[in-house]
Length: 280
Image (cartoon, rainbow, N blue to C red):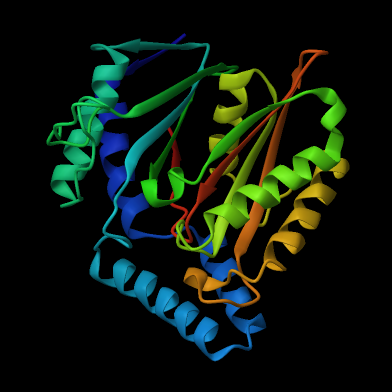
């Protein structure tokens, strides 16, 4: 049994909040640059050039890539042979977010009540997701999520009779309805299966996956490629000005589900698909 003081998790979360907001993942950069090489429209090329220049400046100057530094989504994969000591885990994670957003001069966007509002002043609480896994390590992933894209997400509780075509139509319908609002080129996370809540979580976790990766099942890997091609044919283009590049990737995650259902959730992310992982 390995003992781990939650103060280490606080320090890690604080650092990852800053790094994720200042440095775009290499796979996302590569996807944007690849799309730039494929574009031929003057406006689309200009927009992608601006995006590339922007994330370059952010990294060089150590400033946020986007003014919306998001709501801190924190995923913890906790080894079952780890004993956490020194305090409450959720409190430790929130303290990490508080420090990271203060020290990194990141915009604080969280309100304490969904209806009555009122900014919490420190971007807490984090949206915390925990999973118990084998081993004696803790894998920490911080994914700041802006709401220009989050607001474009959707879930639908299909009957099995809707079939694969129903899912395909839902993905395209959701992206087309989103249009320019999620600051394309976007990344589309899709969760299929489980229950109402689990499908939504799957779609969020899908956005933490590299855009150049594929689902391990060839059936879903082919579906990812097919939907990316169809989405890019919509012509929404970078920032909604038209072009070949509406999405950088489609990531699908799946789970078993009930015989009477086929939940499908779509979580859309903007071109600033931020996430940073560290193993403790």
